[in-house]
Each structure stands twice: as C-alpha cells, then as structure tokens.
Amino acid sequence: MVVSVRDVAAAASVSVGTVSNVLNRPEKVSPATVERVTQAIEELGFVRNDAARQLRAGRSRSIALIVLDSGNPFFAEVARGAEDRAAESGMSVLLGNSDERSDREDAYLELFREQRVNGVLVTPVDGDLAALARLQNAGVPVILVDHEDAATALASVSVDDVEGGYLAVSHLLSTGRRRIAYIGGPRSIRQVADRLEGARRAVAEVEGATLEMIEMAALSVLQGREAGERLRVRAPGERPDAVFAANDLLAVGALQAFSLMSDVQVPRDIALIGYDDIDFASATVVPLSSIRQPAHLIGYTAVDLLLKELEEPEGQHERTVRFQPELVVRESTAPVG
Image 1 (tube, rainbow, N blue to C red):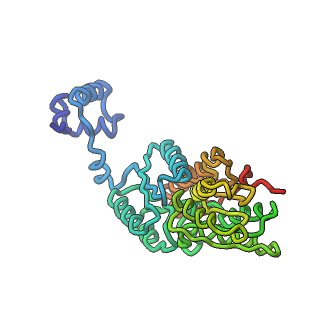
Image 2 (image 1 turned 45 degrees about the vertical axis):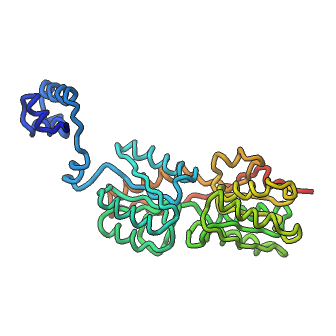
C-alpha cells in the first residue's frame, strides 16, 4: 500500500498543506507540529514523490553526465569529480553511457530533457553539436566535458589534446625511435583527432621520422589487442619501433598482444605510451608511460561551471577551461642501447 500525504495528514491531525510545509518549508511550522508530522511519516513509512515535486517546480536537483565509455577508468574518475562537486551543492548526478554511439547519446539527451535536469555535462561522440546547441537554446545549460568547440557558444572543460599528442610522440622520438604507429579509435571522436594532430607535429620536427595511423572501431582493450596483434605478426623490419595509443585501454590491449609471444618485447622492440594515466597504467606487466589528464578535476570543474551558468546565465564568468596534459614516463618507453 502506497502511503499518501493525506494519510500522513490524517495520522498527525493536520491539514495536507501543513504536511507540505513540513516537507518543504519547515520554518513556517511550529516545532511541535513538525515533530508530530515527522513521527507520522516515520510510523507510516511515507516516501515523498520527489519526481512529481520536481515536475511541479519545473526543475530538479539532478545533473546529467553523458560519457563515451563508463567502463573506462578515466571517465569513472571524471564522474567521481562531478559527483563530489554536485554533492557540495545538494545535487546528484545521473550517468549515461553513450558507448561511443551517436544514437545512444541522442536518446540520453532526450531522456534527460524529459527528466528536467538542471543541466547536461557531455563528452560528445562526434563533432555534430547541433542537438546540444538546441538543448542549450531551450534553456538547459550544456557543458562540454573533455571536449572544446570554438564554433559554438557551449561552455567547456577540456585538456589540450593536441599538446598531449605532441608530448607523447616527442618523448618516443627522444628515446631514438623513428617509426611511430598511432593506435586510435574513430577519428570522428575529437580527442582521437586532436591527439593525432599533435603526433604529426612532433614527427614533422624530426628528419626521418614516420607516423602510421591505425584506426580502430573503439577505444577499448579488445581493440588495442587486435591492433597490437596486427603489428606483432609483421616481419621485424616492417614493424614500428614505437606505439602511441590514444588511451591507456588501447595501450593495455596492445601490451597484452605483444606479451603473448616472446619475439616482441616492450620496450626492447617496441616502445609503448598511452594516454589518461589511469591507475592501472602503473600496474601492468611493463608499467606504461602515459599522458596524464586531471580526470577528477575535469568532472569537478564541469559541475562548478554548470552551477555558475545556472546562477548567472549571462554572467561574465569563465566559460572555457582548458587544462594542460603531463607526460608520465615509466618502463614501457625506456631507451634501448
């Protein structure tokens, strides 16, 4: 049996309006009445219908976060940062996983719009931000996360991924490697394209250096293993002597492929560097060099920026925040010889 506000009012011998005041504006009710209504709520096991209350108010206490892959430790840490900042303001975070698919991203945007969330944080699947711009124009603040787009008026929190790609490949070149392979996901993903651009810049600065792009279907361990296997079965003279993976999951998969057979060793035969510096990167069989992003801070800052947008939609606060990546060197890129 569902207990209603009327049931609570009858049990406490007060009006429905008084129960509503106790739930929403207790300062307007005498302490004795608050205590009586509270006791009735506890005895009856009443649970308020928060969704209905939010619909009446035209807003909620929730923020939506849509990420490319909720199983990726990087995005898990972004979500932690978002939750920590939201909790400080008495709000919650609803998480959606687009799984790097535009149709799922669109479905989540529609769902969260119907839920009347306070705002949406999203890492877009591709460069088509028309749906996000429409959502913003409809009065729902949108913050791009780990993504920046100068062509739109959308606020953003990102990392300079071009610089990150440059750092990764410059490091590989500094160890004497010259045949670089870049294992990435779909180039429609902005981060993949930006990291490739940075890699190309680094290669262009060193005479005799080459860069091969290996585009995979997803940014996952399984796809990294497949890419690594393709490289492993090549003749020694046809393999790259270094690999830059667009994220640590791809790097871990490539390392697994190389480790299956003793004829390819990291870093003796192929140096390997990833991106994100997830916790697991330092615990692999050969600790991975990586490009570190402040994942927790990205999520935290995104919510902070959203709250400022809610408080001052036309305010002069900063609307574009860009962090700088950091090179973390471990055994997987150790110089040879």
